Amino acid sequence: MSDAREAEEPRRSNDRDDASHGRRSDQSDAVSDAREAGEPSEKAAEPTAGADDEPSAKAEEAGTGAEEPGAKADAPRGDAEQPLAGADAPRVEGDEPLTGGADVEPRPAQRDDGGRRKYGPLGTTLVIIPTYNEAENIKPIVERVLESVPDAHILVADDNSPDGTGKVADELAAEDDRVKVLHRKGKEGLGAAYLAGFRWGIEHGYGVLVEMDADGSHQPEELPRLLTALKGADLVIGSRWVPGGRIVNWPKSREFISRGGSTYSRLLLDVPIRDMTAGYRAFRKETLEGIGMDEVASQGYCFQIDLAWRAIKAGFHVIEVPVTFIERERGESKMSRDIVTEAAWRVMSWGVGSRVNKMLGRKEP
Image 1 (spheres, rainbow, N blue to C red):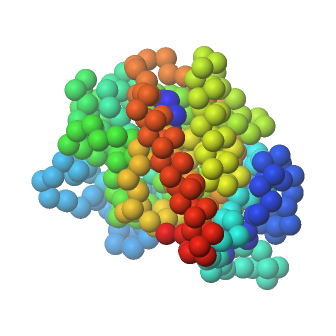
Image 2 (cartoon, helix red, strand yellow; image 1 turned 180 degrees about the vertical axis):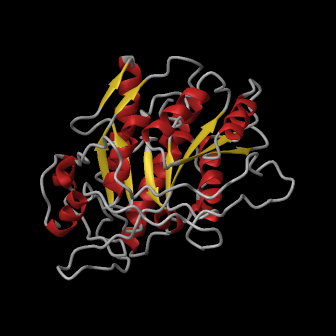
């Protein structure tokens, strides 16, 4: 899908130029963490119902509201921590951790005997796929995800698509208990759909929550690489604009908008992330819990920028890995001028507000 649907104590990285060009910073111990992310770990014990940090054996009835999942949420079968067949080692841009700037209050961190950052097990992965009129695309993308990461679960968050996408998703859920469906009242935007999916996943004990478009623009075959990198990070972004990343079948005008939007955001918000609008992301549960999801009101382009900036301000460890983005072959893009305009305005207001707070000596909200 388009960019619109494309959203502990780390060490600080104040050298943005080094991060952007792949050079090492002084945080060598954080770099080691990112490299160690490629090492497979032993498969965790299968979750059991009732544990606070494990998905429940069955989705709890949430009342009769439209937010209720349309398919039962059976206990996850496996853990994303097990070795993933065919997973490439994470190709991290410069092996450089992207973390909060000088004004960020560091979070408490656990460290091993060598003083390096420690990360806990990932837990079971939930891939959240928002849909609106994606009846042609949802079945093939679900099949590809489950083939690429068999132990993952999928949550289709459908905004009451008039083309019957929700019905197709229900059929997939009836055939495979790894597929869940969240039926929503109507078209409320990409950001709202992801936030609803994040909350549902956290409530049901998933340890990793992944953003993925339904149209095939995000390659499920690259998901194992994101999950491997997440073993040494708080957030992994599948990036088009780092070495090794690329796009396929985009017109130059679309590329200009995406590159320009990321550069504009990076400069105004003073962050080192190269692909701020990327919508292919893997979060640890703790990251989403620590960025203030209840305060997020942005959509589209802006939603992805907002979440990445919040993660950096909160001091989380962010990594970009290269991915290939392929333009949709079926269906219509949800990109619009209003989405781009909203992003430009919000990013400017955030950037100006941040600089004013800095001048006045106030903490970031």
